[in-house]
Amino acid sequence: MDEIAAALEPEIPRLRRFAYSLTRNGATADDLVQDTLERALARWHLRRRHGSVRAWLFAIQRNLFLDSLRQRGRRGEHVGIEALQHVPAGDDMQQASDGLRDAAAGLEGLPEEQRSVLLLVVVEGLSYEETAEVLGVPLGTVMSRLSRAREKLRSYMKHGRGHVLRVVR
Image (cartoon, rainbow, N blue to C red):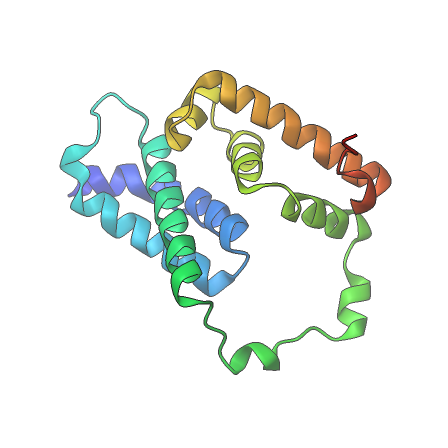
């Protein structure tokens, strides 16, 4: 059990960061991390011995997230009354950095496939090969999605949301 804990514990901050980027909610992200660790512990014997533990954990986490999206699509989203108590005031919003807010909005506007690739490669530091393993797609797909995500984010940062989409004639 100490071997498993030694392998999982260093990955928890990365899992939290990725979970938050997927869910955009602290409590939901913490639940997703917990579910990821529970599944990893229960299926530890199924992992590839010489594979990347980090990539395996990110794959579990992303699959759990996608499962929750599908469930939410069928059931509808639950919003508690406490959500209304934490609506940010105007002054708090103005204190936020414009650059960070724009980057977050640009990231939010990306399709999930591109956002996941960008976050895994740029923020989490996974290699293209590890990212392909996590997402279950070919290496070329990772490279093209990353390229498109970077280009859309650059365009958004330069021109705003209105210029992100191309006009098709």
